[in-house]
Image (cartoon, one colour):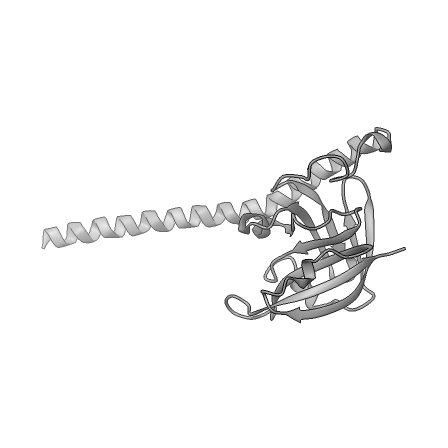
Length: 200
């Protein structure tokens, strides 16, 4: 009987240790998700101040004559004031990036350049409020160089394998992608697309 008790004690100690480790990891994830935007915005503010102190011609915009930013680099902030959306935009689309920010798809245009700027975000976090977006809503994309204003032209629902929304476009457009339906439990079957054009 003492062996059974000893085994039960070891098992309960192991389960307790696993539980504590899980709680520590969960706390780390939550703290990281809250601190990351503050660090990223501080980094962007410092870069913008640096750009402002120098002649504009001496510092090219992202992707103009310099290499595109590497994955994980904060490149801006997107705001949709009417919906209360304000979130950091980071280069890349890995799960780690999308857990903490909105991701910029590397194969698409960068803000300020001709083409289609495509941003992806989770519906469970940063992009849930997109369910209320309508034609005519204004979207601001702030980078280290400039503030870009876009006006929503359309929304649509597509299949996940429909890559038409990330195709290059004429002019300056912004495309937002998130999963749909917004309150679906588990992996969502569709994608919700917002297309906006830069305001003149």
